[in-house]
Length: 186
Image 1 (cartoon, rainbow, N blue to C red):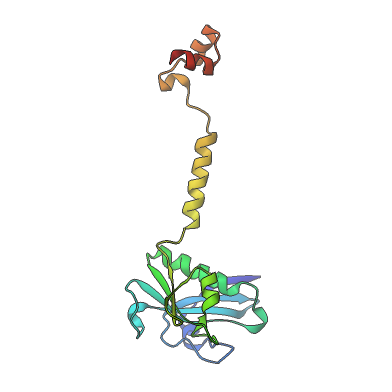
Image 2 (cartoon, rainbow, N blue to C red; image 1 turned 135 degrees about the vertical axis):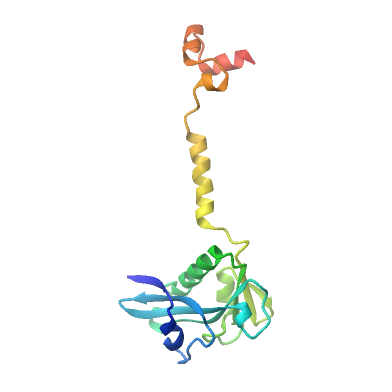
């Protein structure tokens, strides 16, 4: 079974990409995917203000991201992005910036096509993609809205007397069904 765990300070100093051997230089936080005690993927980030390039304020920049070769195709990278977006969205971060490439990717330059498949939009041609968290639907809010609508649609009507219409007792005394009685009163 796989779990997503926040990177700690030891991880940030020592967790190396299995493809190139680099550690996430300049990263201050992130997430790792762990299976049977082994790290199978990681995303390391820094606030835009801590990264050397010019980035929009209120952004988080992915410094390094990787998934081990044997674990490719298991949606681990997608899950790491989703977890990062959920955590940073809750902190009111506006966007996630990912350095990318249209050429050969590495842990510091993710595949542009892959980023676009996860909701990122190219903002600097062939070099940088962004995920705008302000326009991303938060699943709990969306689900809550649907559930509330269903509850309202299926909720038993309030008693007639509370609405200022005839009570059940009055309707029974007239012999009309509630619907017919309401129509005749209009």
